[in-house]
Length: 87
Image (cartoon, rainbow, N blue to C red; front, side, top):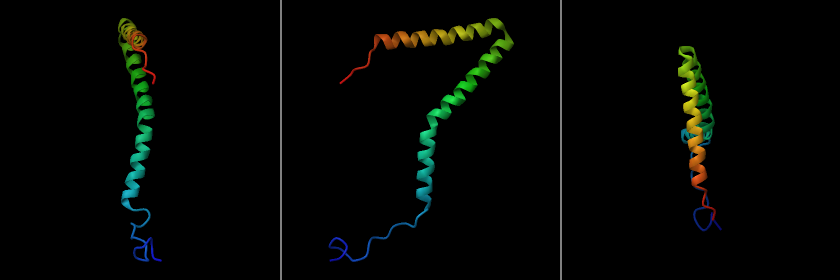
């Protein structure tokens, strides 16, 4: 009967483990890990920046902490004024 009314041999496929497959796997892994690694490195950078600010000057460190608190409060107010649209 043939291969679905065509030739009796299946179409040629690239050999397993080709470079396309390898690049696709690398792309998927990097895409899945981008957000967690970005958050981790961002948190470490923020901590180092805060530590540097406090070691430089107590007022600079407190100002940086105040800036972070102000950003969190501003985000909370913005979220409260813009509730999500539910379908």
